[in-house]
Image 1 (tube, helix red, strand yellow):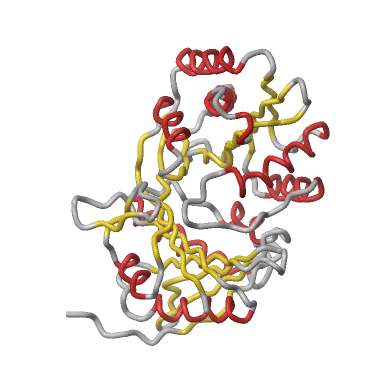
Image 2: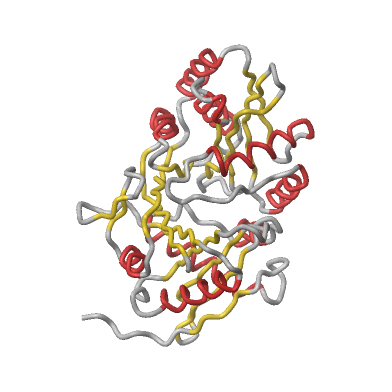
Length: 361
């Protein structure tokens, strides 16, 4: 028997200038909802971010967002996020909804979803991309992605999204690499990849702030993440980066308390950066590192540059005084080449994230 609907109150959550601000309490409470929801779905708290780590992403002027909290009898039981491009001409927006166990299917998702749809309509958006964690699931019924690569289990989120007109446009695999890894094996992977790449390609790496020499190259690589990385049936508008945006991102990364390790590849004949890979490392040594963006420009693929930057960056991680217990990464299921690289390095799947799409009238 279905449980009775709940009386749900949805209200905006203020983004504080700092965690010491008087209005920071609701933001921190909402971050706890996010962490609890994701840990339940994936079966681990490896995806947890502390409020101090996540706040800089909410202060980024290039990635505007709004947050809403759903409360039942005063308790925050869900949060919704509405994100859009800074460019007002973009017609796509992004939703996410995290609702705690025991409150799903009782009107909380409906209340949050209606508020997010109201934002999209007010801004004249024409399509919604919504991402949600589904976990690995078992042997039961599943929904296949329209790309033909990957599927997600039928669960409460799946049923809600299908009932509200969404289609599964992409599946991302969440994978973990236990650490420490064998340095000789990583060196072997790196050296084999470097030999296949040849003398026209040179590895460069740095920690934290982008060196002045590479700011323009990092801007180009981040811009190309929207056009060269697989998006399945979740098309996105181009999100251009320039040197000012790189410097803003550097400052926000530094304020998060996390350390960013970057390995890139320079194409010697042109002097351009043509590949890169990032690892975000928390201050606490007992927590996992997160694999952030990895990209090889389309015109330089087929030379094992993906393996080269990933293996080299993992070696840089092992040079630190405290090596994290693992690395977490996300990859599109249709990105077979990068999945092959990760599998060769020892990554194994721990869960899945579904990318759902809906057109708006």
